[in-house]
Image (cartoon, rainbow, N blue to C red):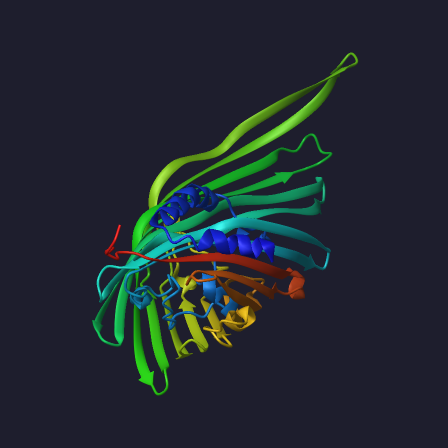
Length: 446
């Protein structure tokens, strides 16, 4: 309780300087975090790695459903049309930390991993009564795996196959939303897509000094601009109730990519000169391709959602996403037969007993829950990997402030042990701070 009280004292400082200092302190850390992957999953070996959830902050405790959400205390980067929901004179700043704890299991054994990192930051504020903006940095995907497979080849003996990779892709975005009509909002995010992924493989023959080891390194680097678009339309109902329909679209974006690879064969031989062992290594480059500029075409992404709200009491959201990854084209005209169309269904809700209670802190807490079901974009042994998760969260209000500390947890399962595959049981913990301040107010007294 003392820790939370300390957070309250820090967050309730109503000062523009505090917000700016917070941003300057966290931006370098978050920029560094984008270049450090947040996964150790063998599934990240395929495609562009582990794709991040669409949702951040408040709605992670609601299964991630947020396409129709218009909450004045939330930065909803998923649907840029939502930026106009921010109250006039308000300024919002958010940052988040995510931890993922996983146990992987197959027919041969099991192992565990844990990854914790800063994930994103975002700011939002109104420009006028009908226009609002937002900008920030959010993750797109992570690659991080280290796999060893042992086998034997007649005449050659034991052989080990190693697969290891790392890297991350991120998006820095600037968004703008406009309300052309009273209950209609449209918006767009212009983003800069950047990052690099490295995938390596090694074939070695332990105990056989006559066989060369083969090492192959593949690098891909992305950088380019893109955009996605959003729409929200609100249907007012009686007694402070509304129904909002939301939709987003990112139409088959094409990005600049730089690719390079090198393949090297190596053999090491240890001989004794008297009693002194000496190791001689012979290496030869089989193939080498310098970094070449090309294009990568990512899938069209479409989403639709609905949100029911009873003001200051209840919010229920449901979303559906679709991405046609089977049409994605990787650099140099390559396609990946392991990639399939991805679909995601999320449903979640929030309940606040009494937002304005002056006697009970527990009554002012926002209680959240939701679930997510996904047909991922990866298929192994003709079996599309499925992912199911359930999430729970709370929003802790800060005393005498509209700022919030959001904490959520998700437990789930990805994959299966059938057909010699891998199953991942995971738990995710999300910590998000939403800072709210009133700006642009002309003071009557100094």
